[in-house]
Length: 410
Image (cartoon, rainbow, N blue to C red; front, side, top):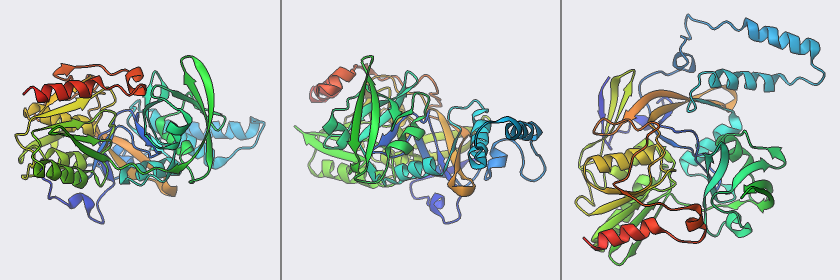
């Protein structure tokens, strides 16, 4: 199936459409303002597999999987385990283990708590949190952004800090989803974090607060419009277009699009933003088993078409952000500046399970307009400029400085 989908296609939002599709990367980034947003980009799918059984490789109608060994294990536990057995916990563990057995870091089982955090993040509903953005680095969940005027900043958390325990529970082997689910909570309640910094562990008790963090920020500096997108949620496309109209009304001469630390979100949101620069162009192509199954096009109303643009990227720029950056680069609509992006080139779909749980399953690979899949390699910027955690914590931004210098010299 090869379907051209443009910005006006609302099929994905029909009441009976399947679960959301998301190009994901590691589930490595989450907004713990706290939201459950990982390296993801997604759209509501109207094709491909529609059941968990089909996506896991066995038909729900005829094929089965032999679970007799699992029953044997359960029987031995009942006969020999010296302790209380919670059957619900065992079932969840078995489901999680089966999915992990696929060996695909982007296909994951989410329990009801993790699913709620994930869905809240994609919808932009944040609620109670502490105001940090997380990524998996060196096998530990670590802070890649601290939001100003939020609880984490007030107690002194810094970029580069790793979370090794939450409320006394060892978190060294947790995924970002699990950390998100534990750190989020009711406004006014507290969460205890054990932070590893420079080889030493420090303890912080933080009171959760409502975190107001829109996905789009914009400002104008000496004729240069600076558009910062922190994630791609349900409001991102309209907010970015509003900012672009303001830039146009104020006759900005050039634009900086800041995608650093943006781990993704809805694919359709990235598609919408691409339409600010591109006129009815292919933004991304999806292939399953080597066959093109979808092509997503930008709109035909590019407010900033032809305006000199620099896109800031780094190692935490992933998934939907990489799709947008790759499309702008391939069409020559923007120069990329910063560091090599994360390298997430697969598409996931969310499938509902009983009890509020979900499966996030890899269903396809995505490719830039020029046919590049950036899995593992990422996208290399035309201009390489490093920004260290020390730069961030000290308020220095050599990447932004270089972009401003470049645009002002044109």
